[in-house]
Length: 272
Image 1 (cartoon, helix red, strand yellow):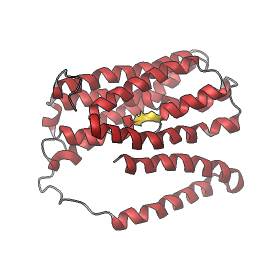
Image 2 (image 1 turned 180 degrees about the vertical axis):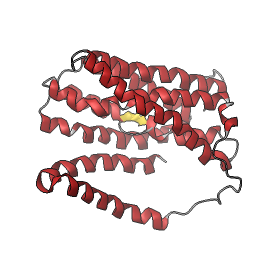
Image 3 (image 1 turned 90 degrees about the vertical axis):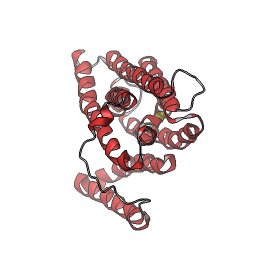
């Protein structure tokens, strides 16, 4: 799963660079079309070669309410809501931050998104491998703590070298859903966690889809809240925005930890 998820990180490196190079030459419409053509071409092989391992369940459901009555699953959903409420604040605002604060030029700042995805590429592979050894939730919690610490550390970063290293590290833990060394585990592991919390394979797809509902709400409100916080200081309240980023992810760690405890108990060596 980590190797498969690393492909989206590779796209996150390539597509911003394609856009940056083509947009001044051929304009926005044709730049997006060419990116779409690349996506179409790279999607053909998986469509042709991929096969399902099992037939779909004959008992189709839109919602499985019983899942929300299972405490580990409920706590995981709440935890991921707060995770994604804070996780992408950096991705949306770091370029504005470095340019506004005079840390980088606009041209160099543009490539921070690609730099974030470099960390994400390695994080998704390495951390997913570790998760196979010590447990999915254990690694998710550790990555959540690391990402939260980095969110708070953002407050003190005011130079080019620091922001580049910070961006790479922030990208790694995002396995759970998208882009950096620590934060990347928080982007690619939830599907695997759902597998471990499902009573049988026939409900995995349904439960995964249901889990994306709180994730979607977290994504929906997180960045607008961060924008309102930034605007409250006449567009310069960065420390409060950075604190909100770190606090949201730290709060999610509490719920993810509670999900682990309700599943396997307090034992530190228990694989979960």
